[in-house]
Length: 137
DNA sequence: GCCAACGTTGGC
DNA sequence: GCCAACGTTGGC
Image (cartoon, rainbow, N blue to C red; front, side, top):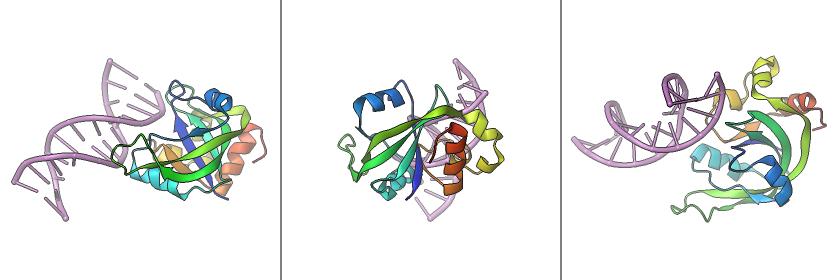
């Protein structure tokens, strides 16, 4: 199983909204690197949900429930999306500030490639963040 | 195929 | 609201 992290601005689409919706399609990605990461996602992969701009913290874990398919909101036809469903919230959100202070997480794509909105997370990074968030990965 | 201009993201 | 990082576009 692979692990990922997706960013969303909470005033556009928040974790609470995802919990309310039970499931959503992750549309709107218009960046090839992010899109390639979406393409590599498999059903059952676990995904951290990060709030950008406001919050600046990882708030929950969701899961891929439908693999890459065309994004109907993309007029160019170049990009796709996946469906995700919430699994559980973190008991304690893990903030960007904490991540930056954690030596084991200094190579995380969230910091190294701050503008990327869909990124892979390594197994050790996943375990570490779960531990910080008070949940079992 | 290079590179300057431009647009967008996202932390501060 | 500013600005750094960086991806994309378009002229040559």
